[in-house]
Each structure stands twice: as structure tokens, then as C-alpha cells.
Length: 300
Image (cartoon, rainbow, N blue to C red; front, side, top):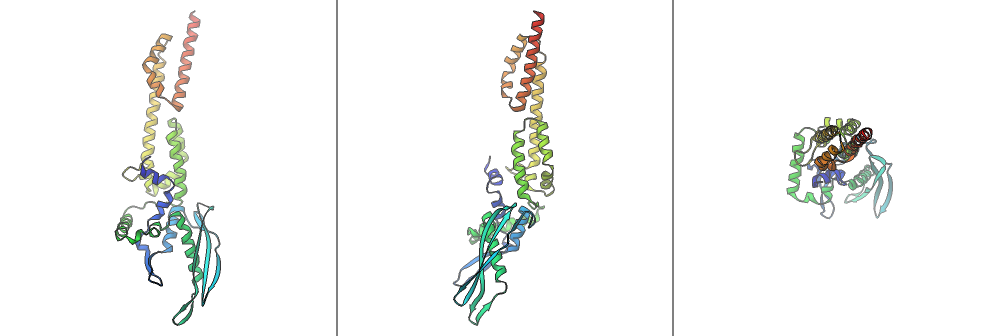
């Protein structure tokens, strides 16, 4: 398996789908003490999660948050803990966030009536960091202007292309299609392969209609499912044709001597057969050998 296939099909599939951040959906901030950073807009993260897993409450979501009020001198802090989930409610990620309910300013105490909401949003954003959401920001890549310029260009070019990747529930679809790919590569004959493809019709239609890269391929090393289906059908048709030809030529043998000569000529090809092809040929050979033995007994 090449490196790109490992990224697309392996443990980093979800991470890499969420890790890159569109600079258009970020903003710069500065905290007390001079710390500067890049903040990711929550609504864009929710959009990315919806693209990857499906609508909130179906493909991803969260449980009810909890809150804790913590006095800090003349200020009052609030912390929120929340569990997010993706795929199904049992696949949880946890996050903690916080904000100031009351902060001390030069003009005296100031209350923030949105502090609880901010703490909850912060907690949920932190939970989905574990899946890779905004990973490039948290890994410090946005400190590199060249990286920001490159990723900005990538997103702008993507906007100009036909819609890709925005297939509802794509994470689950990919999981099922990975299984199809494994079983399809192991299919013994064309009929078995076609049955697998037919069973996956809805998932294949989803990526086809979404113009998804898993259907089209990437124009390079990544083979899309369209090309894969065509290739595997051609391979299996060729295998079926080869076995059919072997069995037909085997059928022309009428004596043990002819059968032995046939094996001497075609032995290497027979040895290369495996799976259903090998079983199909072995059955035909056993029947032919039995028929020749029976004729010899009658002649004797």
C-alpha cells in the first residue's frame, strides 16, 4: 500500500479530513500579558464536523454540559465539561473549557451574561481537538506565514472546483467502503464481486453524486472506486475466461496418456490458480479423470 493510501484509509483518515483550517474562518487575538494567537471560529468547526459525519444529533453531537463556578479573588470563573461524540453516542471525546463570569476592570467588576455559553463552546471545541479539528493551529503551523498562504490558496482553489468531500455521513460510508475494497480484492469470481458492489450501491451512489475523491480518485496514485470497479471486473473476467479455456481443453482428453500430456503442458497455469478458480478447475479435472477411469474399466 502506498503512503497516500495509508493516509486515506488508515487511522489518520478522520484527523487529516479535519486538520487543515481555512484562514478565512480564523481571527487573531491577544490576551493579557501580550500573548497572541489564532482563534478558530466555532461555527466553521461545526460545519466541518457535519460534512464529515452528518447532521448534528445524527452523525455527531454532545451530551448535556456541566458547569462549575470558581471564585478567584474579586473575579468569578466558570468551567464547563462536555462529552462530544461522533458516529454513534458511544464514541465519545471529552473537553473542558472556561471563561470569566465576572472580571475586574479598571472601572470595577464587569459581568458577562454569555460566559456560560463561551465556556461550553470552548469545551466542545477542545473535545473535538482529539479528532484533529483545527490541528494545524494547535500544532503551531499558523505561526508560519508560508503555511497560511499555502493553505489559504488550497481552500480558495477548492471553492472554485466542483463540490467534493461534502457527503453527509462520509465517515461511516468510508468505513463500509473500506470493507468493500478488502472483500472485493479477495473476491474469487465475477459473480461474487458484482454481488458485493450491488450490496454497496447506496454508498457508491453517495460518493458518485457528491463527486467525492473516493469515487473519482485524485488524478495521481489514489485509485477511485469507479476505476477500481472497472479494473477488478476486467481482472475477474480474464480469470473466468482462463479457467473456462482450461476446462474446455481438458474436456478434449479421452485417455490417461492424453490427460498426462495435458497436465505436462498446462501444469504451470493450473498451479497459478487459487480460490474459486482452483476449486472450479479441480472439480472439472476430477470428473474428467473419473470418466476416463470408467471408460478404461468398460474396455477391460
